[in-house]
Length: 184
Image 1 (cartoon, rainbow, N blue to C red):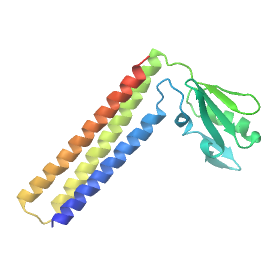
Image 2: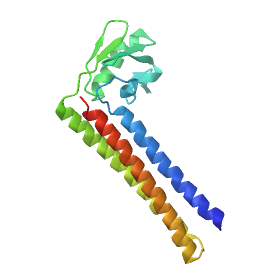
Image 3: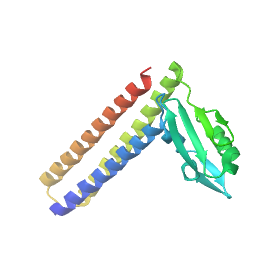
Image 4: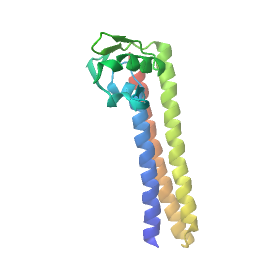
């Protein structure tokens, strides 16, 4: 019986870990004034008839804190990459010098910083919802087991402690990201 309870707890923990990993991945995409290759991770380029991630058709570097350099492996892709960056709604204005594409990352305005904080809060809320649904699923599975009321109560307390722990971690990560975004 105990193995089943442990399995359900491990499964809930795994789901909650997934929510945290997703949140951290999304936070990397939210820029805080500093250039990062991850900012272009969502850009897809038309490459031989199929949509391909930009990172699979070029080298993406950050020569300094305000510049992203995209060096395509095929020079013929430069117009396609430029178009993809413009249509990706990231607010970047790519410039091409015939060899590569250079993106100057503008400093953030106060209004843009607030928008990014809102975006970060929305991502954190999505993570909290995922954690809570993992808790709900675990509790549902625990109720299906034929165990004593005391054991069920203890297991539900364990699930709640796990949930509280992950919600606290989400809050900590969010406050760090907020501070990073709002720092001028």
